[in-house]
Image (cartoon, rainbow over the protein chains, first blue to last red):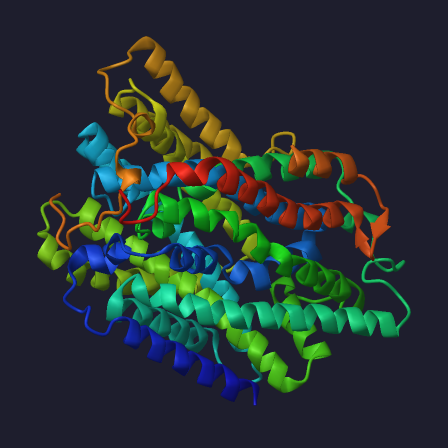
Length: 481
Length: 56
């Protein structure tokens, strides 16, 4: 029954994806990547929460609490919440920048604002290297979900199915498919998480205990002390800043106006009301299943333990859709980076075809990494954030800085990426501070130092102009750059 | 301030509210509070500066 429900839900989602692309197959690269910049606030909302609440929410968060305790749960919740407060102010500016330069990727922005091909290339490579572990993160989660359905699937078969489905979402109509499928995914995800959470609360109450207050859960898993506190605070601040300034373009650029971006942000924190149910399920699992060999399986093991099989099917369907959607959108971002920013002189008319090709290449690469380098999901998430954060100083410069040389931004980015990788591979935690924050600070220090020594020419930062927010504009299907 | 202050203030405590560690409970309270703050900011201060699409 579980398999049947998951297959039926995935089939309906594919039908929605094909329907979303109806009549838009010849829409050009703008339609394919940013939906022709036409999404209203409600669709921006669903696209954003569809991307933000990835499979990490259902699989990664419980595994983090299970393996590492409260500090992992708190930074996960804290950074998303803080990001919304920051995004309310900066997301409209990112949209304005994208509109001003007809940008569909962040490197598009850097190239147009600074007229620097080198900066565009380095930013593209940085984002490419970062997005591959992000894709791996989704694959690990999908592998967990598909493997937990009770059917005999090898790891290769699980990631092959996931990759194929993600490719289908994108190939038919670009960003518009994931945006519409997000509505379905969110319904299943909310229902599944709430069902597991309530079931664990009922089971706990039946045993006369609260979710956490049992002597079998060590105190260090319910409180935050010492370097774990430093890690939680520094990671919350760091990832909240990165959230909209490095990752947000995927759901900001398709919006039809600054108003759509800003008004949709207001309601995003309410979606987080699913987290109390997830936290309850995580602590229940610590008590009920204290010795799981693979912490990544904790949520699905709990679901199977407390729910009837048809409800496990709904939970698995929600988890699968959440991973597939983010995988699809990430693949699209990779395809766009390669076809628009890495390969020089591709005509806009053929960029859509090349993007689709590189979507497939990325999916194969991330699947291979999943098969041969799988690890704890939240560890992969940290590497991803450490790398993607290195484009933040350049984004901030586009929005706010009048005089910064593109060479300074390029040098800062290179220093930041090298440091992020070195700290991930070899570096012990420095007083528990997030390694990504240290790398981004080094990046920013290079930019600021260079700026003080050699400021360069004056440019108008995006925040100094307020022209585009006064009207809704639909970008032409074929961009001029 | 509420998010970071709450984590710093309640993170060390083993106290529980409704069965959750207090630091988690505080974070849960911040979800609707953040939306309320953003809504007040949008409704009473910012919305008039962002005309509806198509409006002049």
